[in-house]
Image (cartoon, rainbow over all chains, first blue to last red; front, top):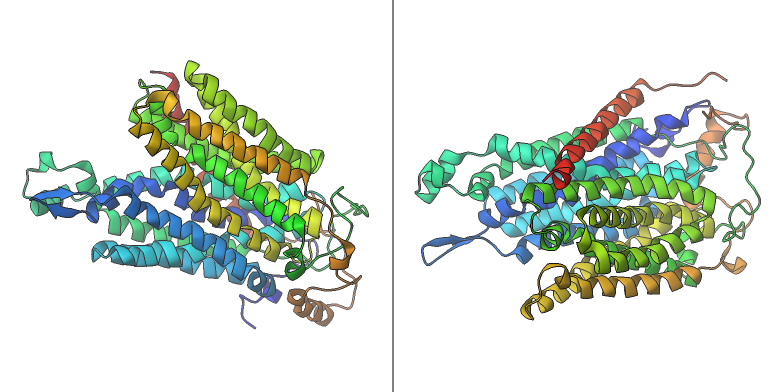
Length: 492
Length: 37
């Protein structure tokens, strides 16, 4: 039996469930690097530039931005198509696959940079790395939901909080690697200029290959440790002294719905819309964070603006664990009422009053991005409430196509409006107001969609006592290793 | 009931915990520039 098999990840009786979250954090802190890809943007633009009239002209923003878009699209697609595979094969195999794809993405991307073939970077970091993103993203979610049936919001917050914080680590690491490996003399020689005249991005372009290879190796080790540590609970495991309520959430009918039936229900599509719109709105701030604060407040330096971007990464992470945990207390629907309703008020505030004070602007943006992160973290628990935990991992994977769609639609909407405003001569805070009002409208639609989420019609429920296909092997394994009924483990 | 342990998990807690603290401190240092200029 392979050590990657699901049966080998089965936790023994009495296993401490708090030993499982670091596996999720290790994987998500690694794949969260994609939010810091912009650190490499200038170096990549330089590397893939071309000579025009004797001058080196950097590649377009769009051609380099496509790397990120392919990664996010592949995240959604691989999560959607790999969800059931992950449920059947267990989180360890999914984490190993994610680690291989993610680190290979860096390696193939490095080859693309080395050989000046941009399509290889698309294929490596974007396509192959994107598969690693999707598999890594969903791999710990259903496992932690099963370990924390008493606190599903906390579980999903723990599972994916690292994704929000990944950029917080990757950003300083990437900057340091670019400085460490930059070969200014080689850049000067290739440009035919003095060392002092070498542009920063030209020097950094020489560091891309070793920097990416180093990062790929670091993430491979970190994610492999996550795969070693992850454990799934025995079937029927529940914390000591905890008894599930017949209808734990108002949205629950107490039934279990499989992934195929889930996508036949209106609630799945309302939830898809909620996630799509919440993400689209959040991207409005995230995508333009750095130029936005400098346009609002011209006195803000580039270094301080970079600090603002880092702060939003922290907000993204804290929102995931904080708001998602709170959803266990106030309920999932009310949590999204807050994300979308209060979020719309905050967007209006930043449009109307954001320019009056740096502190107010930063505070509003911080809360908005915490809602963005919270929206991601709470949705698996929302799915568990509505569809049960039967195939929640696979259903979550399918829902993540909303993220792919928002990853394409969000920047298109925001940048389209910004370009139009710029052409009309607007600048400063006025440049952003129309796009912020569009975000308010988007959140309002999401607000209504959230209110329309209803308990699932019982005709879609699985029969009482049904076991998902991916659990049938586990049942056999349990029967083989023990004839005794499974009892609770330690629950601190 | 005696708790079953996994030493690698403790090591990983230390690694990810240190990484998170490092990230938060770096972010705080950079963010300070926003309010001190």
